[in-house]
Amino acid sequence: MKKRLSNILGIGNVSDSPLDLDAYSYCSSEAELKPKLIAWPKTLEQVRKLILFANQTHTSLLLRGSGSGSVDATIGENTLVVSSEKMKKITQFDVENKIIEVESGMRISDLNDKLAEFKLCFLLTPQNPVQTIGSMVALNMATKETQALGRMADWVEEVEFVDGTGKYYNTKKKELVFGREGLTGFITKVKLKLADKPSLSFDIFSFTQLLDLLKQVRVLKKDLEVYFIEFFDKKISKELGFDDSYLLIVAYSVLKGKNRTIQDAKKISNKLDLVYPSLRLQKYFFTLDPFVSLEKAYDLIEWCEKNNVRLHGHIGIGLFYAYFQKEDKDLMNTFKSFIRRINGDFGEVFGHGSVNKSFVNPVKKKELIKLKDEYDYNNILNPSKFIDYR
Image 1 (cartoon, rainbow, N blue to C red):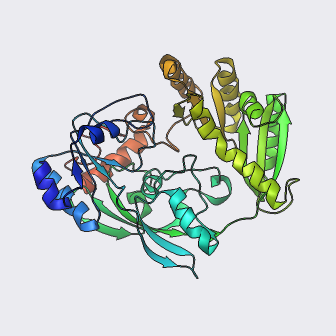
Image 2 (cartoon, rainbow, N blue to C red; image 1 turned 30 degrees about the vertical axis):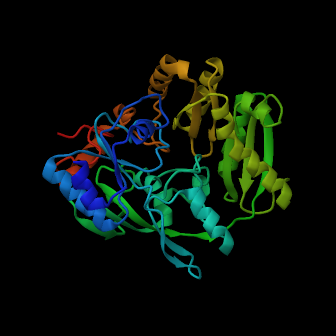
């Protein structure tokens, strides 16, 4: 198989070396699943030929971006992993109209580094800056800016992808790929809307009582000039240099916050960016993304505090990040059961993959099966991930 794939993709774009297989055996979960081969297509035509080959040989493909998820969506035992990492070019750039077309393997941090020269940016910033544009589309990702700006689908004009039968599409029909976690096709290019870098101001609120915090969140959610609202538990608050109390950091799209100078805004933004890597350094390697109503946020925060689970998140939209260490496997399972009891969900950031597919409701599952029937009826793409099909 390696030789045939090398004929399709070119020498150096297929590997079964132990080093590569080990590297692609992991995502950001505790699982280790070693693939058979790694493939790195570089063009649309190579992707199309690879998928046609997979159909002819009944070979399953696992689609992968940067492997930053924690739901085992991009790893599989004895499988063929197809990575978008070598597809990261800018293919069109209309500076005047603030439109850019990029290949799906472009990382959000790299994209914004390139856009800085033009004083433009892509406004949705995921928690992990190595997230690829393709994976953000596949997950229809929510970020802290979603409260004011919407989700990934709201910032994309067109998507180019190859479906599970090898057919090519360049489409504005977002329902075909957004939030589908790779079940319908391999995304090759994305046309994005850009914007000027916003000038934000900030307010910082501390609370000793959760009810007071939630009351403040309700008030802030009615303010159309609020850009995002970030919550931090007491321990993270203290590590950020604040009091040992619950913390809200509120960004406004206008200069009405108390922290409004460029220096103050940059200082606060830098602190926000440091939370995730700081917790990783403390060996909180596993992150879950509970999504709950504001009414249930009290229960979530209280549960995490009681069980010594680190928690922060985008409380304005009900999206949080709960952190666990390696020895917390049983606690993670208990946490998932708790989230189910309070009618919460997972998947707004990391997707459902194979770990959280039990949270997919019957209506959505029926919708996904219908899409599979049309765009991947041989079940070549990401089998057993997200849903069980056939």
